[in-house]
Amino acid sequence: MKYKLLLPLALFILLISCKGKKSEWSAAYKKLLTRSEMNLKGNVKSIRDNTYKVDSLFGQLRKLSKDVTGNEYFEFDTAGRKLKGAVYTPDDIASSRSEANINEQGNKEDNFYTGDQSTTTERNIYLCLDNGVIIEKDILRPEKESKLTMTGKEISNYDEKGNLISIDVYGFKDLSYKQNIKTDGKGNILEDETRSDKGDNLLGKKIFKYDENGNPIEADESSPVDNTHTHWTFKYEFDTHGNWIKKYTTMINMPLVENTLTERTIVYY
Image 1 (cartoon, one colour):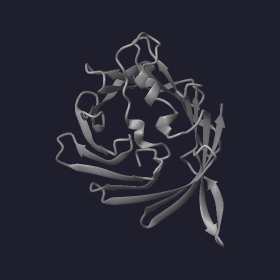
Image 2 (image 1 turned 90 degrees about the vertical axis):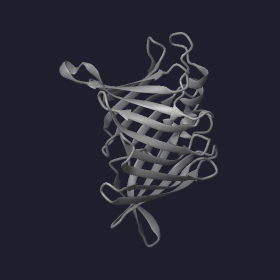
Image 3 (image 1 turned 120 degrees about the vertical axis):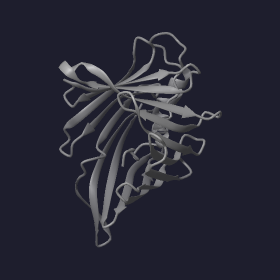
């Protein structure tokens, strides 16, 4: 599944103001690139997720082994802006790291590195269009002599109410595919339909359901290309702040059924 359902799906919605001086954080930047995009409540300093494969023995949940996905770390400053991240292997070795900052042009950047931070693997730069709402995401990756070269671009389109309705995804020059998106008006994506560049071929579709607090509780992903269908369900346990600290996930992709438990450690300021 392309999108990480560990995070609220409002991650797609990035509104960056074109105004403001270098190194300033615009109001939209403060609002959307924060703990709120991960549906976190309270003054969270950091989170660390560890995910395990599990089964049930005599009605008791039993951890088996660390899963290969879902082992992550995120760090926030006192204003709630997400600054750093890391992805870990099941052996707790950092396989990749990321940092967010404002570049000299006043645009937000995400830089991704190898686990030891010796090599930049990708840089995403978010640029405003003329109306200050629609954004472009430029994707740069190392090419010859490790020089970062633009390899892709994403353009997000919004309706008159500011809801994300589509994302145009480009390769080096040409449109590769288009995502048509339906939201609930709160930043949560209800449907995400991926079509070919001309829009005539359906490549895949995702459908999401949420609880009253914006946590995903069900997800479906289907692809007519390879005739697959996967269904997820999510259940949670919460701390006193209303943030989940345990998430039970069941993935059904017949004949495969897989259960995982994600334990989240939250540090508050």
